[in-house]
Length: 379
Image (cartoon, rainbow, N blue to C red; front, side, top):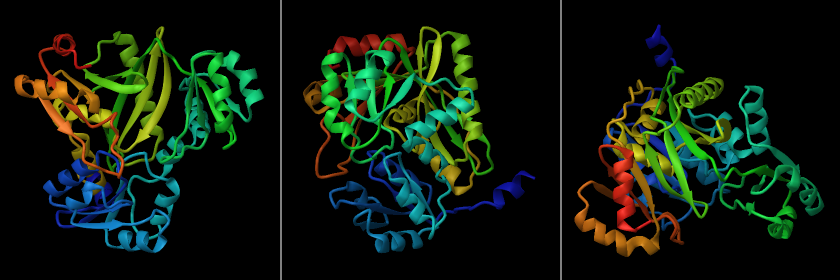
């Protein structure tokens, strides 16, 4: 029976062409993993500066509004995938006219409409952070006291390439929202600043079976991801609750591939933060921490293979590297035998100095690794 289910789906074999659309920092590793598994890879990017074109078998460089070129790209592939959430859903729906996209659009639709995402999760009994819709500045002044500080003001409909949001830490920040509200309706939600962010990554296969990567904790500094750590030291009752909620969400979603479910844990309460289709940079921790990576499992799922049993191999901390830290990183490069260094390829004309790479550090336990990191004074 299982074989009948699998063979009724789209099966991709070594030598077949997989198309990848999206220009995130994960694109090169996704391409190299696909090629190591025997697939041919075609990519569609908007800039010749994107280094992924040097790794792919075939590349299309063009505007995301170029329907004719997008069609040519799609028709040369057996399947197409989007590598991250940073892709406009309208493009995916257009491509579906010409090629199979096994990931589908349901999770991307939830991800890119914050109101639909929250309403759908609340119907499942999943608690989300308090929120209200905001149409103008007067509305914001009336609502911000209800939500409280800090609060985050974000557009209801995400713009993957030009997202503009505002963190409101006090009343002084409210007038800064005026130019944003001229763009359309926004969503204001509370922004927990004393809790913990815990993320669960899952992979779903074409036969609807799903496996879960080890739970991780994300830590931020100045609103940028600083580090991700695994395993997570958390109350077993809360851990079980997180696993139950993540499983309930995953069971409700039609999707093939890897995705993340991100929660806040504050004062013993669990709130959904967001759903992330595709690959997110925090998942690079599994390049060392587990027996398989999100890149391999994404490709196994999309090609119709059986997804792997996923196991934690070694306690790991992943640390984001910013450009100003590079001199200190060069010192650690010479002396740390348990640090593994990775640097992102160039994906656009403008280098993101906040995210130039990452370090994976492993050890006997997270506390020991963290002490070693703190002693370096890099972060």
